[in-house]
Length: 339
Image (cartoon, rainbow, N blue to C red; front, side, top):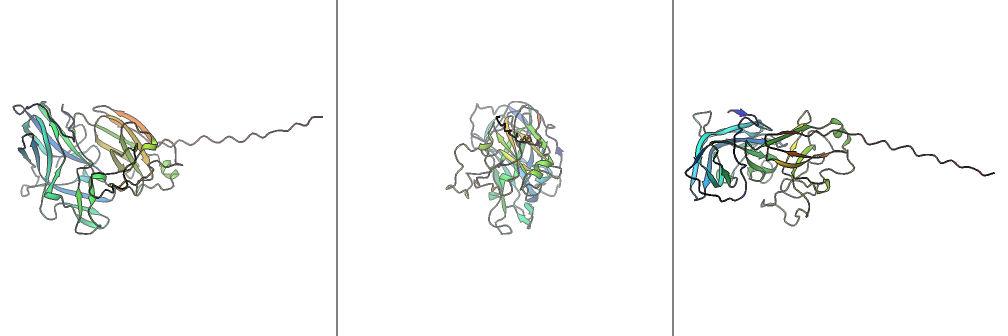
């Protein structure tokens, strides 16, 4: 399996969208496309292994184009990939140089192997099944432009898309959801990375690299009081009696710090972003609105930054500790006595 850095697949293409589309009939034109997978890591798993078999592209007329994954093992009909091996700006090719009609497609569907012991998650309780409903993951509509060659990356934000159905160790196992999965053209993607000052962890009462320290990413310029936690209102287990309050913005993605206090978001659409470091992310349920203060007060200063990322850019935002200004000593009043 080839590992490709962020910009290695650059090509002129449009951002694939996750909403419905229309467009002119361009079926007489074709383009050559490649698809790769990458992930933003999840903190509670040491492996998220999936056997990909096909990419199905559903055309506007309802007919499907099936692109077979070419496995490294010729005896298998799937390519087994541990998504945690392809974090940040790294990706793994699953479809290479396939010619398809230009135009807008109703859906991109990832087909996953139904064989036993192929799809699994290793977590603190051992190896858990990853059981994908219908062995398919439907990711929504997208558009292929008339550029001759295009490359796309399917980015999994596993902290949002990987969920346990039932208790850990039960027969229900994990599933993958479309929520938190993005499809991006490599010509338009940007990346963002940085480091967190150790002093910020030392100053935070609940901070630790293993359990609670995260970087949250929000689309747009968002004030600190509007920063919300992870939520999936479309999940069947979402508690509708506890909705996201008006004015609260939910994250586009989030990621834990690595052992060197670095973080990385490898495949992002262009635009404005707000980036926040928090010591308060350990108990963030990816489905329910928890009402967590992403940057609780009192806390060290400068934990929220704004950044604008343009196509092809590798953005850097570091979180540095700035000591508060010392409080001046009070001035002693002198009393004068009149004679």
